[in-house]
Length: 589
Image (cartoon, rainbow, N blue to C red):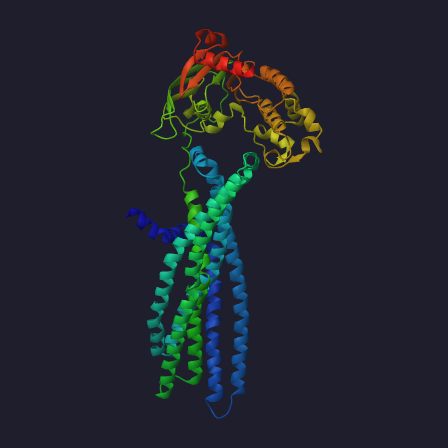
């Protein structure tokens, strides 16, 4: 029941939230209303001028050309001022619309940057991007139409109704009595079209997510021959979009004909009432009846205009609701007010009684305890899904522990700002990431103020300098998204150079040399050995041969440390690690 009530009030709630964004443009909004009022008032006076001119022609035996000339001059002035007012109003409406769109898009992007990793992990990238780009664009189109039509429309309805009352009360009553019929038709259609347009927007997002997922992993798709399966999946998503779009367009397309039919009834009622008044010797004249018929058209025209763009407005509201939902997603827990913003750790780490799970009913890490001293090299091994990556996520506070503490030099991670904490770590992951920009900018990502000499020195130590110099513009070569045409190994060397430049007190290496050839790997391992001197490091290893010299090896399984010790000590125990080592050596042979 509560869900249905929330769904029913969704459009009204969205409009209220959109108005909160518009409230930041009070002055342009006030000027837009003022120019709209000027334009509408003058536009309403023009039919009255023409009506008076008609009476001057047929009301007397002689035509009053002087009076007609004066009326034509007034009409021309009114038309010119009305045109200028409309142009100013449109300019202001454009400024308001695209200002609001910029604010919403900025708010949405800012919200994404502070959303917890759990949200980004559980929502398709394509859907999130679709909300920020496509949904906001659709909302902009609808909002612009709304400003243009509603401002002038409401004022026109009020103004023409006042003029009709002044001309003849019975004519005005005929119009007012038939107006609810038009409103009823519009409301009925709006209620149904909003739901269908919201479903259409969601289906489009699902199709975009499927396309994004397929294209971003196209090599894997082709390698496993999944093209046909993914094409069929996308066809199904597109079919859902087609069905919901047809339903939405059907309801929106009957709005205009329906309201036009009602408007024709209003026009006929005005003509009949006015004609009867003239025949019965009432106050109406032919000229005033002509004005009244013109006002009847102008009175109903806003309903036609609004109904003609109702599809876009409903679609815009549906898209706005999705964007606002993203903006209102709870951000990750803020840093403490007294959290340390500046921190230079020595590298001692204490992990005491940590429990963590992604979902409450599926425990992952339980009663995790570890004490690491400055300069120690800690290797983490274990089967897939044992919690290695989750442990790294907890160290970096990408996720917060459910209970227990993680401390650096005796300071709880929660007593540091996230920036201060993460600045203490350097990470090289198996999955490389490079942004669109120059090679120099990518290496200096963690240290933007680095000198050219420092950047080149870091690249030399990472053994990336030689291939960088062979690029068309060396360190100033612009690479595309995710490294462009660079090989996986070259991209990984650049990520290693990035960490070499930062020279952080604590390092996290997740199979950092997995994509590098053996000869280069040996060189990089030597560079790492130098970098790791007097630095605490956590090495997630898949190849056990790379961690035999670690100070301590943690063997994890099902979120627990089941064995701990040096390589030799663990082999002597002849336990889980020994079985992993023997299996690896047997496979290698």
